Length: 118
Image (cartoon, rainbow, N blue to C red; front, side, top):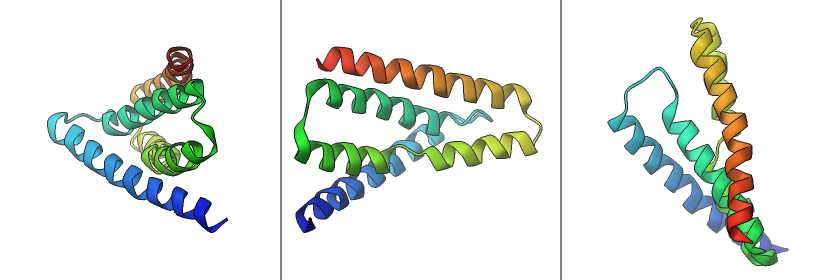
Protein backbone atom coordinates (compact mmCIF):
# COMPACT_ATOMS: atom_id res chain seq x y z
CA UNK A 1 0.00 0.00 0.00
CA UNK A 2 2.84 2.42 0.83
CA UNK A 3 4.57 1.72 -2.49
CA UNK A 4 1.31 2.39 -4.35
CA UNK A 5 0.95 5.74 -2.60
CA UNK A 6 4.55 6.62 -3.44
CA UNK A 7 4.00 5.77 -7.10
CA UNK A 8 0.93 8.04 -7.22
CA UNK A 9 2.79 10.81 -5.35
CA UNK A 10 5.82 10.68 -7.65
CA UNK A 11 3.65 10.68 -10.75
CA UNK A 12 1.52 13.48 -9.33
CA UNK A 13 4.56 15.60 -8.56
CA UNK A 14 5.80 15.42 -12.14
CA UNK A 15 2.32 15.79 -13.61
CA UNK A 16 1.66 18.98 -11.66
CA UNK A 17 5.02 20.45 -12.69
CA UNK A 18 4.39 19.51 -16.33
CA UNK A 19 0.94 21.14 -16.27
CA UNK A 20 2.33 24.28 -14.63
CA UNK A 21 5.13 24.56 -17.19
CA UNK A 22 3.01 23.84 -20.26
CA UNK A 23 0.18 26.10 -19.08
CA UNK A 24 2.57 29.00 -18.52
CA UNK A 25 4.24 28.44 -21.88
CA UNK A 26 0.90 28.40 -23.71
CA UNK A 27 -0.35 31.48 -21.83
CA UNK A 28 2.87 33.29 -22.69
CA UNK A 29 2.39 32.74 -26.42
CA UNK A 30 -1.40 32.91 -26.75
CA UNK A 31 -3.40 35.72 -25.17
CA UNK A 32 -7.12 35.10 -25.47
CA UNK A 33 -10.32 35.05 -23.45
CA UNK A 34 -10.55 31.39 -24.49
CA UNK A 35 -8.82 29.23 -21.83
CA UNK A 36 -6.42 27.66 -24.32
CA UNK A 37 -3.85 26.51 -21.74
CA UNK A 38 -6.35 24.41 -19.79
CA UNK A 39 -7.96 22.93 -22.87
CA UNK A 40 -4.53 22.08 -24.27
CA UNK A 41 -3.38 20.13 -21.20
CA UNK A 42 -6.77 18.45 -20.79
CA UNK A 43 -6.96 17.29 -24.42
CA UNK A 44 -3.35 16.16 -24.39
CA UNK A 45 -4.00 14.34 -21.12
CA UNK A 46 -7.11 12.65 -22.53
CA UNK A 47 -5.12 11.42 -25.52
CA UNK A 48 -2.17 10.22 -23.42
CA UNK A 49 -4.36 8.45 -20.86
CA UNK A 50 -6.29 6.78 -23.68
CA UNK A 51 -3.01 5.72 -25.26
CA UNK A 52 -1.78 4.28 -21.96
CA UNK A 53 -5.01 2.37 -21.48
CA UNK A 54 -4.78 1.07 -25.04
CA UNK A 55 -1.22 -0.06 -24.39
CA UNK A 56 -2.29 -1.92 -21.24
CA UNK A 57 0.43 -0.42 -19.05
CA UNK A 58 -0.33 -2.59 -16.03
CA UNK A 59 -0.95 -1.81 -12.39
CA UNK A 60 2.33 -0.02 -11.62
CA UNK A 61 2.15 2.06 -14.79
CA UNK A 62 -1.47 2.94 -14.09
CA UNK A 63 -0.61 4.13 -10.58
CA UNK A 64 2.47 6.12 -11.64
CA UNK A 65 1.33 7.53 -14.97
CA UNK A 66 -2.45 7.18 -15.03
CA UNK A 67 -3.52 8.07 -11.50
CA UNK A 68 -0.43 10.05 -10.52
CA UNK A 69 0.91 11.92 -13.53
CA UNK A 70 -2.31 12.29 -15.54
CA UNK A 71 -4.37 12.95 -12.43
CA UNK A 72 -2.20 15.96 -11.63
CA UNK A 73 -1.53 16.97 -15.25
CA UNK A 74 -5.16 17.31 -16.28
CA UNK A 75 -7.45 19.63 -14.39
CA UNK A 76 -11.18 19.16 -14.18
CA UNK A 77 -11.54 21.70 -11.36
CA UNK A 78 -9.80 24.52 -13.27
CA UNK A 79 -11.99 23.69 -16.27
CA UNK A 80 -15.12 24.12 -14.15
CA UNK A 81 -13.95 27.35 -12.48
CA UNK A 82 -13.01 28.84 -15.86
CA UNK A 83 -16.50 28.07 -17.16
CA UNK A 84 -18.06 29.77 -14.14
CA UNK A 85 -15.82 32.80 -14.74
CA UNK A 86 -16.86 32.93 -18.41
CA UNK A 87 -20.49 32.73 -17.30
CA UNK A 88 -20.01 35.56 -14.77
CA UNK A 89 -18.31 37.68 -17.46
CA UNK A 90 -21.23 36.96 -19.81
CA UNK A 91 -18.89 35.47 -22.41
CA UNK A 92 -21.57 33.04 -23.50
CA UNK A 93 -20.10 32.05 -26.87
CA UNK A 94 -16.66 31.41 -25.43
CA UNK A 95 -18.19 29.37 -22.60
CA UNK A 96 -20.30 27.24 -24.96
CA UNK A 97 -17.33 26.68 -27.27
CA UNK A 98 -15.11 25.78 -24.34
CA UNK A 99 -17.62 23.27 -23.00
CA UNK A 100 -18.34 21.79 -26.42
CA UNK A 101 -14.72 21.50 -27.52
CA UNK A 102 -13.59 20.13 -24.16
CA UNK A 103 -16.16 17.36 -23.95
CA UNK A 104 -16.38 16.46 -27.64
CA UNK A 105 -12.67 16.50 -28.38
CA UNK A 106 -11.74 15.14 -24.96
CA UNK A 107 -13.71 11.97 -25.65
CA UNK A 108 -12.47 11.85 -29.24
CA UNK A 109 -8.82 12.25 -28.19
CA UNK A 110 -9.15 9.61 -25.48
CA UNK A 111 -10.69 7.22 -28.00
CA UNK A 112 -8.00 8.00 -30.59
CA UNK A 113 -5.31 7.40 -27.97
CA UNK A 114 -6.83 4.03 -27.06
CA UNK A 115 -7.00 2.99 -30.70
CA UNK A 116 -3.43 4.05 -31.41
CA UNK A 117 -2.22 2.45 -28.19
CA UNK A 118 -3.73 -0.95 -28.90
